[in-house]
Image (cartoon, rainbow, N blue to C red; front, side, top):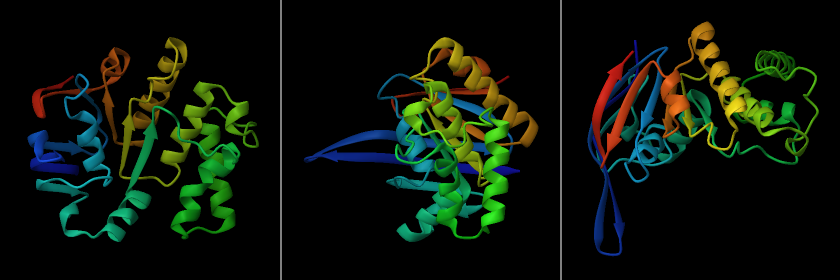
Length: 228
């Protein structure tokens, strides 16, 4: 089943009167349960591509369908709802709220949706924190956690609402080799055991090694698409 489908997607930015193309006609489909990395040098368009898929930006032209729904037909409020409900985000800088505990950071997406009881929130958050290896650390704030532990909180936050798609933008960039390997192994485990669909933006060889599909982007175009 296709989770994501892009056809003829372009993105052009204006700097003054100068048009700067970031994407030049991207055709891409992602199946449910994929563990896929989008790789390329700085300025290749990979982060722009992830932002469009994540409803953080809109394409200049072309079609993006998430779960069969055409995103260009949605207004800003509807796109925000799609982000909250159907997409999980993992960032290289963790983006945790410093005044909240690990538990509170992870429960936040559920509270924003406003669809879960207190008992269901507690059950979901405790379960996912246990699965990412943070049982017993629920009450710690980000400052009291290591970088690897903070990224585990970020993974738990992305997964707690059971999204269709998890977008990870350079998730290992701020981690040392040992923690980076551990985080990648954890996400691969979540992919294999839970069927979570992961799409990475990266230039980290470690991520490329773990990916089961590698898409290389250069100058706003897909240069190579390899399944393993």
